[in-house]
Length: 235
Figure 1 (cartoon, rainbow, N blue to C red):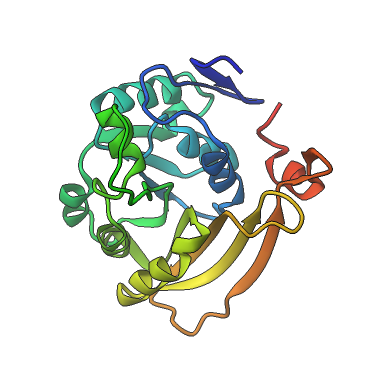
Figure 2 (cartoon, rainbow, N blue to C red; figure 1 turned 180 degrees about the vertical axis):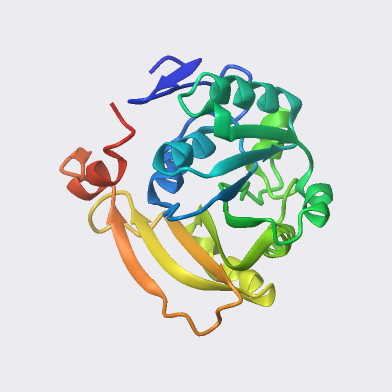
């Protein structure tokens, strides 16, 4: 991998203009999300456009990336237009706090790899701070926006730090988004989960939750489960 791009099996992600580069979190969410029969998908905080493009590879939906940073928008559009699914991909420069109120019940699937750091001490890059910290997009705003934009029984998928899961699940439930599937992500055998993948369903409070674990590495190598999950994407 070069710092300015990341090559996948069927597409390449350029990332020289983006504060947040391609990482395991985004790949996990794109690979884990079940696009199903979705026809209209939104990717909140699309960044490089990675997750949108991964989902375009998996389904026939029209996918819209929503991104507040202008340079990231330019980069995402560049990556989308260079992909085999360019006719179904687009990006809109917007703050989700403004965007969502004009798009009620429009999407049947929403995904987000949101900022989640809450530390007071931040780095020197304002763009990276916005991409990484909840100052720019807090959990309450994200769940409210997702619920408003989703059709009834629509799905919302996110990846978060494991320690933030319960707080986020509570916020989601207050917005009528109920947990349908949860996968705890463990980096190595015996370790405490580091990330959690969550899928919510709008309006179905009595849905049974599927719970699982995903081990990323074993004996210094990618686990078989991780390789299987990402086999359509990683070279």
